[in-house]
Amino acid sequence: MKRGSILLELLVASAISTFVGGIVFNLFYQTNKALNSINRVATIDTSALILQSLLQRDLNGIFVPFERKEKKQTGDKKAPKGKESVASKTSSDKTNKKEEKKKEYELVPIKKGFYSVNKEGNLHILSFITRNPLPSYGQIKSRAARVIYTVKLNAQATKEFGKNSYTLFRKESTRNLYFDVVEKAGGKSIINYEVVNNIKSITAEYVFSVKEAKQEQEEKAKGEESQEQGQEKEDHTIEYKRFKDWTEVKKIKVKKRSPKDKNKLIEKEVKINKPGFFIFKVELWDNIRKTSKQYEFKMYTKA
Image (cartoon, rainbow, N blue to C red):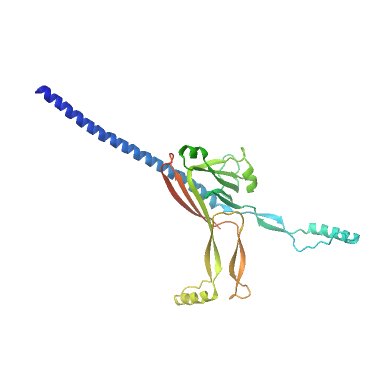
């Protein structure tokens, strides 16, 4: 009896220990799995926070500088060849010298002051000039810098996981503000460093608002309502223009009131050098490309 009872107790004890061990192992496995998923999400959130803070810092100081260029002269007619006399040539030489002295200049926005293009449905290049360059210790702080963001396909990660993965790079130059010069430059003077990797998709939308004068009938109707309510009458509406890319200065026609007749509306061309509102949509992978998370950044710029 004693031998049988001892064997039975041993079997019961081993069964209980196996059951408890399975529960403990399952708890450990689930805890470890949850911890890994939390770490992956935290890594994605950290990358998104870095991207948002850097873009916000750069865009807060965005501006488009102007440069002095010779004004193009139109309407000058040249005499046909072979019909110019000596006297006319001498007089033309004198006038040319006078014209050289009296050259007219104008201020025009710098070429590609704000520039953005897309590629394969994603943002490819975003470039602008900012008043907030990154601090460089041991050097005199610059007041302006040309910033270029570039999105490139990460071929190694795409091949390894079988899913498209992009990397966002950033470079800036305080010595030269021209896009074409900075884009071609490289080496130690302009460092192109990685900002965020594991990007599944990234898009940008550029918005600016335009004031347009109201039609006379709409103005009268709404003016009567506002007078009844004791409110001031507005003589314009705000229209929002949206663009996916920005390769040149935007020229749009806006309805304005004629300076001679306020009841008459005329079309006036307005030039927009940079957007006033940005919408960035970013989707980021985790490190093993199992989960992804979407973010939307809305940013305003100072006028």
